[in-house]
Image (cartoon, rainbow, N blue to C red; front, top):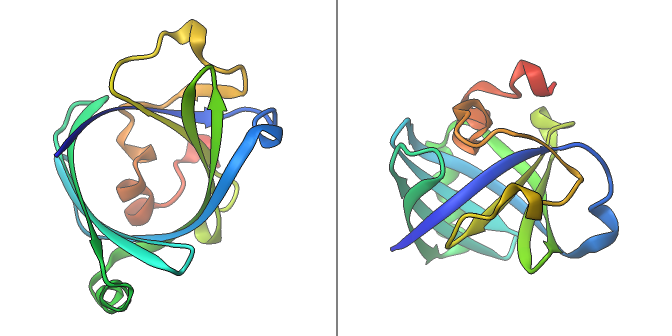
Length: 157
C-alpha cells in the first residue's frame, strides 16, 4: 500500500510544454466509483495495464493499491466500465525536484488540462510553478472517477 499526498490544479498556461520529459497515452475506466473508494483499470500506451484501488475521503491523502494485470484482461474488463472511458496524454514535467503529471484530456473531455503533484510530503505554495492555475484538490468533480461519470465541470469547460 502507498499513502499518497496528491494535489490537483487546473493548468493556466503553456509554460510547462518545454519542460516535458516523457508522455504516456492513457485510456482508463472505472469499475467502481464512490466518494470514498474507486477501482480503476488503466491502459498505458496500449502496451501495459494496471488495476488500481483507492480508499479514503480526505482531499489530499488516500490509500492506494496498484497491481499489473494482463493487457488482454484489461481490454475484457471494458465491458464492465461505468461511465465513459477517459482518454488523456500524461506529460511528466519536473519543477524544483518534484514530478508533475500534466494530463491533457481528449475525447469527450477535450479542453481540460489538469496537473497532479503526488509526493510523500506536502509542497509549500511558493515552491509551485507559475503555470499552475487554480487548485482543485478536494473538488470531487475534478477527480477522474467523477470526470468518467459526469464529464467536464462547467467551471473548466
